[in-house]
Amino acid sequence: MKQLRISFLTIHPSFIESYKTFGVFSAAIKNNIAEIEVVDLRNYAIDKRGTVDDAPYGGGDGMVLRPEPVVKALEAYNKPYVVYLSPKGETWHQGLAEEFSICSSHIVFICGRFAGLDQRVIDHYVHKEISLGDFVLSGGELAALTVADSILRLKPYVLGHPDSARFDSFSKAYDRKLEHPLYTRPSSFRGHEVPAVLLSGDHEKISTWRKANRERKKTL
Image 1 (cartoon, rainbow, N blue to C red):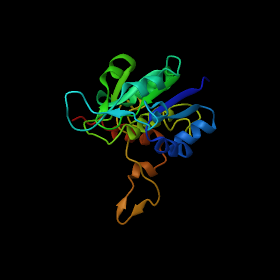
Image 2: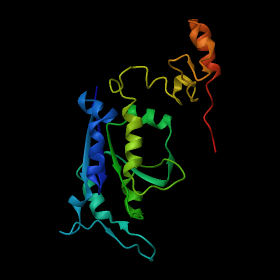
Image 3: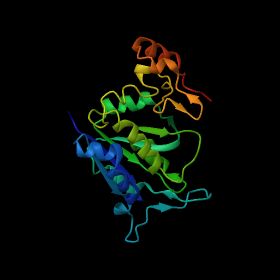
Image 4: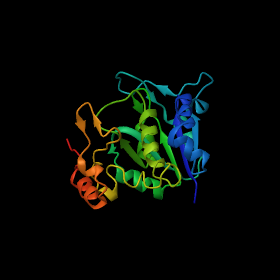
């Protein structure tokens, strides 16, 4: 199996590094499923002070990530697939996660900060802009980690059980619907009972109940 390489370009490398020690990130690294690389954009700063941003042309609030540090960092790679986390991007969904988990060999996430990234980088170096929804975060790190997590958990040997990802909400196996409700012990909790069919041992009836109780994806 070809190892997936994921690189994060960020001005807060310790933020990303902390995620490599647990969860699917740790499992993917331990099992040689993925190489996770964190690149400090300040290593490519335009001066010794570590400057990576500047004021926007035309005025306005906030600062903008300059193109030089980002492009220099990208040029250190050989034809990666470059993703920029942006409110303008395509909304991330399970189908995209499945595509990326199969087709990608090296993904570079540009984690934006400040007011955003110089548009020339987006126009000429970014292959895909991705959004998590119609809201704004303080930076692209959390969004990039979320997207990477959804990709990594689909890779073989990352999760504890091979069917865990296959039967997730929004998976092909569930016809892109939400997973059915889940119950565990005790069978009775403060007067609230587990549906009797789940205690029946009749696998056919249980399968029918689960299919009937899957919900379609909610839409705005």
